[in-house]
Amino acid sequence: MKNNDAEPAVAIHKILIVDDSPTERYYLTDILVRNGFSVTTAVNGEEALAKIRAERPELILMDVVMPGANGFQVTRAISRDPELSSVPVIICSSKNQETDRIWGMRQGARDYLVKPVDPQLLLASIATIDA
Image (cartoon, rainbow, N blue to C red; front, side):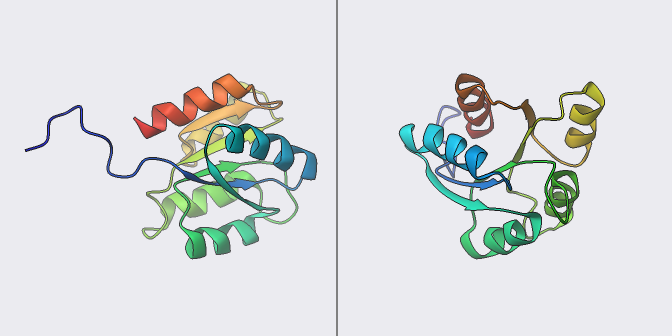
């Protein structure tokens, strides 16, 4: 019989970064890889949805401002899709208004971090989701 202190069924290891900025993808990838995570990237929402279905990441870091579907739209699509809705999304955006944060959370995001993302805040947010 398991107790309440047991490890979660799926610890977060595979993370998908969705951002159209090569600099931002590199920055986030560097933080995550140095902390033992496996990272894949997508440059827009359409590529992200394809990679989520194909690779089954355990967490998604989502930019908001991208060509095509924006991060709010893609997050909403993920949270409303029964096949994908179990994958948590953390929005990482340069949009730092409280209304943006509230809107992101309403679309299904588990957290909302403002760029440039603080590495400690990012890791703390992942740990909270992983708990």
